[in-house]
Image 1 (tube, one colour):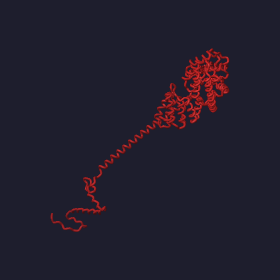
Image 2 (tube, one colour; image 1 turned 30 degrees about the vertical axis):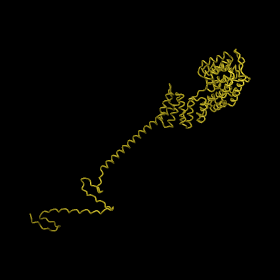
Image 3 (cartoon, helix red, strand yellow; image 1 turned 120 degrees about the vertical axis):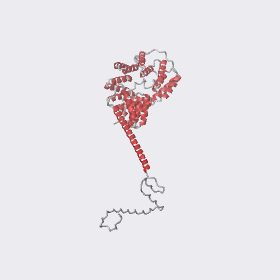
Image 4 (cartoon, one colour; image 1 turned 60 degrees about the horizontal axis):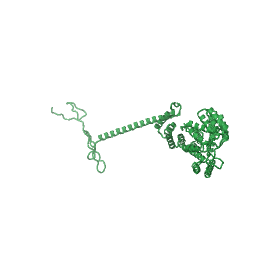
Length: 487
């Protein structure tokens, strides 16, 4: 029986990337990056932008070139980029695009508080920088503030009715609320305004997946890959569709293509880690799980699954450490108790503690709905309980045997003491003294030379007294005797 229990797809897919584009906004103009507008978009009147100093422009363009170089190398040095854009902003505080790009960098490093502050500052300096509004809306959406994100998207659409990106983002919110008709309507509207909107295509793909229309989802996904083969999310969605179709080999290829496009794309690392665990490729699973934890060290499920990978490789102590980390991050993760119990039961010879953890898992995993009676955990629990019972009986038998052994030793000691009391005391000259009341003679002492003296022959027995015969009777066989004259 393979007792390496795995979790059931515990990793959630991430919401669509919160960045409007793959990186920082830029243009081919000599000045700072400008936001591209749709030809039919209504322009909001703004106060004339303050002129940007040439020094700030040069520093900004240098920062953008550094970003493009790192993007081609698929290796981003965000702290270095941050320093460059800060230098440009310090040269001219009115450079809204530098403020925005610092927000993008902060968001990619997981610093959402700074990212929001940067986006708001960029909008203050340049209200027409709608990418900042969109990113703020996505942050609110990912945080669960649906109403706040909808308000931000609608604000952008009021200012720019033909903005395809905000329309597609708004479509994603409706999809998440299971309003697929509205989601598809907004997605098609976004594509009418921007036929190359991969954001709208992703919403359509997910909507088809939600409704189990795999052929339509695949058709739209392939269209998206043709439009932008460098988008890791599109390759990932193709892999998800292939998994749903039961083609895990093709799905694995698609997930790897996503990582070729961006090697830190977490959803594809998640999917490949799960596929590796399913195939019992534990070193492969470990590699992907480590990449996941590099991006999010507080991912309790990643720690749990890394423990499974260690357990599969026989590294049980490391596995237990990962289970401890997972439990610290999420005390309600029932699978921690199950997998810890398996190691204690099967490896550590601690069935008593394993029984406790199996019962804890059943209580946590069952919740309001009881686990199926066919769940493997019940068999494991019975097996551990049987071991506990056998150990208890063996312990009792061992204790009984020790008591019997001690009793036998006590009896032997008592017998030896009694024999010592009954043994004759030694005579003063070395001979043995006859017991009291006996008629035996004292044994002769052995001469100093060591030889035993010859024993005297026993005395002749005394002749029996003759029987007195009556007078006048003679025994013809006896010689005659004189008669006694006395009467």
